[in-house]
Amino acid sequence: MTEHDGGEPAQRSLRDFTGETVWDALLERSFERRHPAGSVLLRQGEPGTHVLAVITGVAKVIRQERSGDMSLLAFRGPGELLGEVAVLDDGVRSASVETISPCVVGVMAKAEFLAFVSRHGLFPTLVRYALTRLRESDEARGGGEIPARLAAALVYLIDISAQPHIAQGAGGPVELALTRHELAQHLGTSRNTVTAALRALASCGVHAGRKRIIVDDLPALRLCVVREA
Image (cartoon, rainbow, N blue to C red):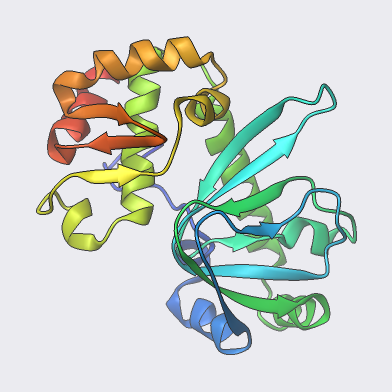
């Protein structure tokens, strides 16, 4: 959850890197598909036959490790591209992607995507984009106090998933369809540690429901991120 020195949010999505014109051109050449929450968009181990551009909604990136354990690597929202690595390296999917809210995605076949990337000179941009996503994933599991990392993860998820008036703090409570176990996977810690961290964030308007995390006071949670950083 990094920021530039000037306090502006760091570039995160592919739309941020390419600009609206190129992103819109990509969407114009894709076909739209709608998925309810809980849908598998991409499956680990399958060949990279297409990419997905997230138009609305949020998905989680999960990987089954050799040990059999599951890792929640990241959350992806509007402006993000999914599945491009397997397309670019002609390999198989290294992780699965599952929606945690209703999603609309743009689907582009491999050949058309590669032609689009070449036409717009996007190969260097995609490398920077991949490195940024890898760094963000490492930061989620990096050092620091768990309450601060959890608060930052929740704020980030709300920012990419909520309606603008909610993200700006003008709405009511925000519910995130996540379990404590999934947050533990994402932060690289135990479920009990996440439970303790949620208790620590109660003063910031955060509490857990059944398979839900509820944020009652987003501005307070943002202040918690600043205070704990």
